[in-house]
Length: 125
Image (tube, rainbow, N blue to C red; front, side, top):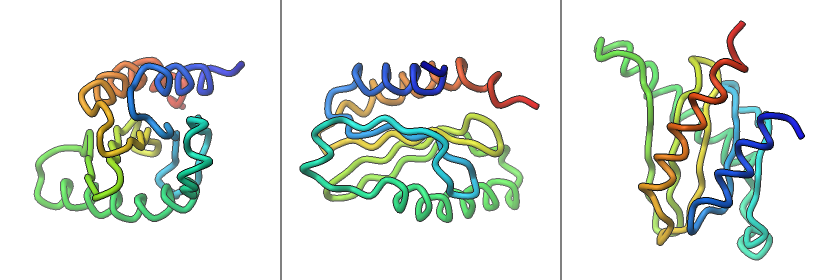
């Protein structure tokens, strides 16, 4: 098993209410993902989610740069049906956690921080 799959599968298992964990490039292309079996009933299209939320992420990245507040590290979006937590791995790649509304947001953030440490060296050129 590759390191990406190992890390994101572990994250998915540790967080109550987790539906998926994705590794995505800032071009919107999903590098790898782990999905909870429950997602089949939900039917979310994670490739579409990653692509669409990437445009929001790019705007947030540009805004942080434009107002000189430093590099964006994390972004959270809560909707009526889901929670999305995004953690930058590098300037070119990010992790996205998708949770049900009752999912354990705090644990998801903790797992994202740990995963960033494990994965960022894999993305260094």
